Image 1 (cartoon, rainbow, N blue to C red):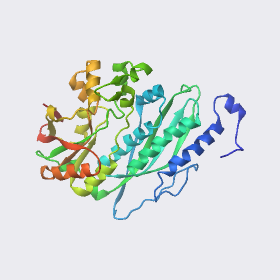
Image 2: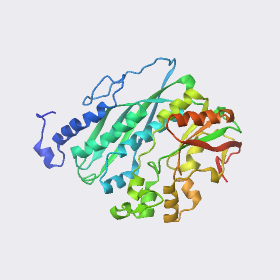
Image 3: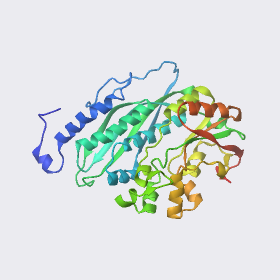
Image 4: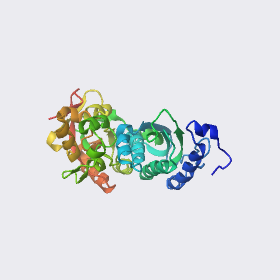
Length: 346
């Protein structure tokens, strides 16, 4: 740790550079868990160096994704639990990247705080590192910015970005989809990291409401809401090796009606039987408590479906088997039909 760099004047203004050095020291053990063969630099430099392994790739294409955790962080603040939101941050980035068929290679995070509490920063980074381990990518750098007067002393924001690589000839081509193809759902772990502005409004979220135990959830509301976003990299990479995948959608904010059409070509829609959607209990609790119309629920939340994949009907069983073998739950969600409606839930 750098013991020769300090500024009492800067500290009096609210920025403690020595706390930053301590935070880096505390996070190093977590970052070390994410190291892969491509990493050429350690934490603390001005840039993260990564050497791509081009084995088997003839036309490498870089695919990038960036996102944050959003107002789910408010739940972490109220519960004073900071070791899982980093998983959400990684998930929101890498789950987007794999929709192209790309494999994530590395990740960088950005943490902005009102006051640098090194132990809290280390907790946040432990979650980021866990997300990187789950997705098989390296945490090669990041930034912690102490911004007094901009953020409350006990609050922070968390964002990041990831870069992946895919062979140009293997980029998924949604135009190959046709009527009769099957859409498969890969189950989510809960609300993930979207729709929390509505969630907080519905429950008038505070320490008391978060501590309420719901029998249908099997735990408290707070514990349920802080459940980390599923990371689907392992399952999707396994799936891509097993069958021809035509399209993938990451179901985030905007739910079914916004995200699924993003991977459908003009003239095709997906027809979904409402009874086939395996809705998680938390969404029933949200809808009932907030008296939210079902159409709005499906246009805001993932409703228990974290990702969708489209394959030929003949490949559906094999695709589900591959996803389950990788540790995720999957089932047939619907079928593609000739229509311009995008999503038809009936």
